[in-house]
Length: 210
Image (cartoon, rainbow, N blue to C red; front, side, top):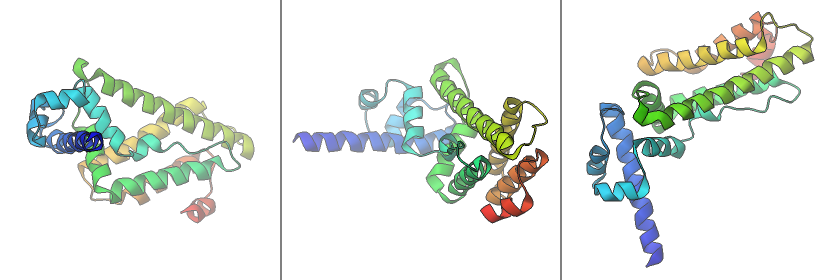
């Protein structure tokens, strides 16, 4: 009986997260109430609160259920070829966005359908933490590559890392609005051009990594 109860609880949680994906995508996060999600999942409001304390908790659980590629694209950039590691991480992330429907749906909600209101402060904090981690990773990659290749960076590595991060997120944002271009090819080409401008990559090496 205990096992059945645990399975039932997991099924209810999954149903709530499934409903959250679809209702958030249709209405936006701010305009969706927890009651809307409970009704869509076919459960009571009390059952929802048994699993999630508030909307931000539910939203973050929805994100955690899917391996969001831009949150997990933190390759090891301490090895012999940090630029290759960075590029391979981006390639994997963009490919997952394009090919996995659930990943794309959740990313669209997180990118286009959420407002950072006080009620959703925990969501904003998650986004900020992810951004800091990615900028730090890219910062390390640029500094390590600069040292290994003996190339002086034309600007502080932190500034360049912020620029690289914004470029990638801007491309993903544009593609989610209008997926009429090849996101994977465009993203990798943009990264290659950016890195060549810093003297940290060559066309031959970049294409060999593809």
